[in-house]
Image 1: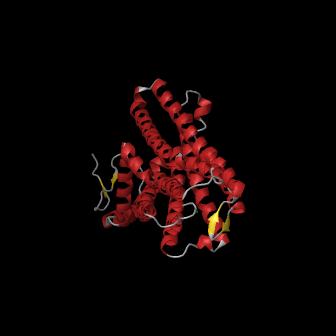
Image 2: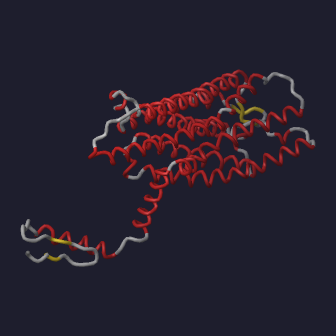
Image 3: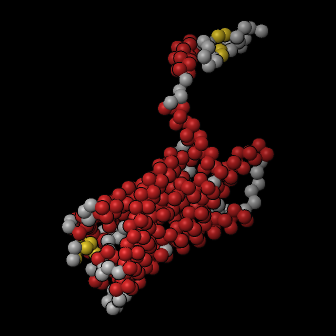
Length: 361
């Protein structure tokens, strides 16, 4: 939620009242982004931490992206709604004014570029060159993701340095607004969607052109692995499309606002532009980090299966762990060390029963 002059401060007219009501309704509707978005991102983290996906570099990037989304949604939307109904601290506290925009912008940039890294990982894995395929490794993913997080926390330091309070509003003054508009167009509006699109198309091309020689003994295993990778590619492709539709208008409108800052504008034009700025910089911008789980769930059968398995595991651990399983574990720990290999019999432990030695044959 960027800090701009509210449309409610302009002279009251039918158009002003109409847009105020719409903006207030859309602001309160973002509570659903906060609730459903955080629920979805928590479920994302839960799924990507499952044993079958834990060592997958793409899943690791998506896991970290979901964490960044949780922090961005929780911090930005909650403070934005509080400012509407209570006190807007950005107009009275210079430190809060600087830190709020810095924190949420940095978290969103981290989330975006982790998705870019996930697309790059899929492209590397689908390459026919072994050296490139070897780049898809969990150890490298951890190093690169850590470097990405540090880079954006340092690279966005210009925001708190130049953001200030003027006329009781938290604003980007003068030339810096133009610079920030250009920066937003390049690093949020151009680079992420271009890289996402290029590497996603490259991956799809590789998947359609590659022909693997599969041994009959490993056919089923390799088929399952390819299906899992294909499902991850579908998930990423769908998220790239949503990202382009919901995020690209923000940097373009920011640049337009900066370029036309010194242009004389009528009251109605100011009202319309302020409302459009709210749509692009607040409402649309937070759709992408809110809907990632629902995109994955709708586009990937494998993700739905992993979610079901994860929920079943959680249910067993928290609520439904059988008592007889604990008894068998306790008994077996005492019996097994005392046994020795017996060519005429074997030790058998059944759930809910005590160990018994099968009769000799």
